Image (cartoon, rainbow, N blue to C red; front, side, top):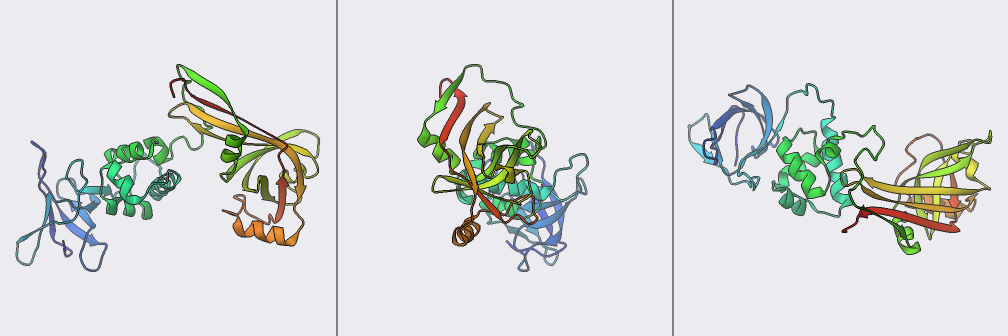
Length: 307
């Protein structure tokens, strides 16, 4: 399918009783005129980024002949996928963040573009575009994506991101179980953010989140020499990681306890820096590596009793 600026995009609805829709192509995303297109709908005068399906055709200005679309459509309705280009009104969501959250959750689940798009009943091209560009997908598209990724629309939109986890209701029949050492070690080994409990210089207890890595069963993190996490050095500390699924009211936590020390060997510091999955989120000069060698490793999990 190829179009030019000013051509008319016509959507012939496949649903019984649904209205035909058309709009003017006011923007091209590719120099060769292939989809997607920026379209101004004639019925609402609103702009949208449209990924045409097989129920659409182009009405060229030059010769007035429609061109059929051969691009794949969203399989659930056969209609074009569209994303609004108008400015948000009451929703303050950063439209680029939606795609980033989708991409992060998809990779966390180990899913590819094709598999995710198939489960979400949408075009792989649309999903790829959504992950890489600012977009405002329809509620229906978000519902399908959330279902395919095992999450919620609110989570993809970033709703509740400033609230602590655990806002959901407890399960009717929860099962609370202790985790074995091997499972604790496996859960801890996935890098991310954990919390370290230390005694502050004034003697008061404190809990601080840090980005961490696990190397040969040793927990490591970077900090600054005068920072609060640096108070862990030379003491026995507690380090905790967890995951909470608010939608399903389940989750797990792992607690490691052991002595903390500064990593001083230059080769080890170089190796840790090279393999780190990210720099510390707080930024700044945080070049001191601290290691914790757990002498105790315990964990707990909450699930539904029938799981």
